[in-house]
Length: 322
Length: 248
Image (cartoon, rainbow over all chains, first blue to last red):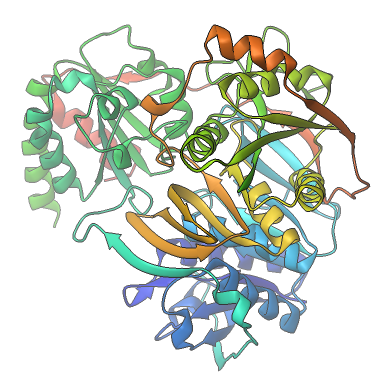
């Protein structure tokens, strides 16, 4: 039977979410009395997965799969699940995994639950807790099919080491021409910048920064923290920052370990989009700003005064602790 | 080109979220419903194809009679006709199955959904629909053009974008970018008047098994009070983040 994960590999290593999936799947497999198999595409050394509880790795080496292709990758995951007789297939919540998961579910006749935020509440019946209503509520969902497909929210489980000897084998699923009817023509990726999706820390700015010319203050803080930069909807609407940085209910979701909101009042739609973040720091001149109600730590003060001093202090802290 | 735009009828983004009947049902009391924002971006792009390339635009929703106001709004924005599948949408697979049936019967070339709805956030319907129909599929779509049977799309990837060449028939999971916020249309009086007489067909649901069921809802635990730090004592903030929250 086994629990199957699709472990995403990019830039010469497994993504952190892949290791989180392995940790999660190991815990699920333990309660079901089975083991974890990972399927990977064009991965190099796969031994790292063993550290997080994977017993077996099916590695697909195929030049046609150099670029992500949802239909073909879904076929890979489906065939791996069938080969292993997997009852639970676990994917992450990256844009790629969310793209292919429903295709995998249809292919396997499986029920699917996305935004899963914890281990199954029970495995018989199979019930999971998932976030819904843009983080404003949770929903307990029962997956009633024999095979289940789950997408796990980033940072909801964390990494748990579980040293296991992972055997690796090559896997060559049968792919059809129809799998390649969508072709990637080009990929644009900002290099050297942490993406919001991958970031453990996100530093986000609103109108309190008073103008795009002040963004270097926020960028300095982000660089010091190794963080991604983001912004509120008004800021992207008036063109201070690109839409790709807009986080919130209708922008990108954020599920980082630390979210620093600078000069953002905290509209309900903004908070809905970032509420999955574990720790929230809010810096705002208005002590009545609604954001303070959901913050862990707050500072009432002007961003242009507080943030450069905070950056300086953090640099000193990093220097002492490195 | 025949376009089908799938519309979800969802609570307005400012809605308070509460549950009733022992936390098993969403409390609709006082809630305003809107076209799901991701769907509205897609609808607006569909209207662009209608105006620029002579496409015919049909909107469809799976829901009870109370959702017709949302379909009428889509007609007021410019869709040519509407279909309501008369059923309570119980899970993503069920909805995808209903939409697949409508799509097969109507012979649509392009099917535009929102990448996810703002209520259940499942993000399953566009992909499941594409899987059931075995059509090409682009999710998180931020740009879309069609030339004959060829389609070109951009999709958002983590940290960037990807340009994809594909072909009709095609299912798209749209989001902001497929049109921008400023391109969204507020129905004018003429649109609202003509929407009243545009065709809105009601079809019965096709038999489909649910694959999941919502058992119960829960609101997040109340948050403990914020710890305020003086702007003159930033060392304390660093100390708290390092030693208490352990995030730096």
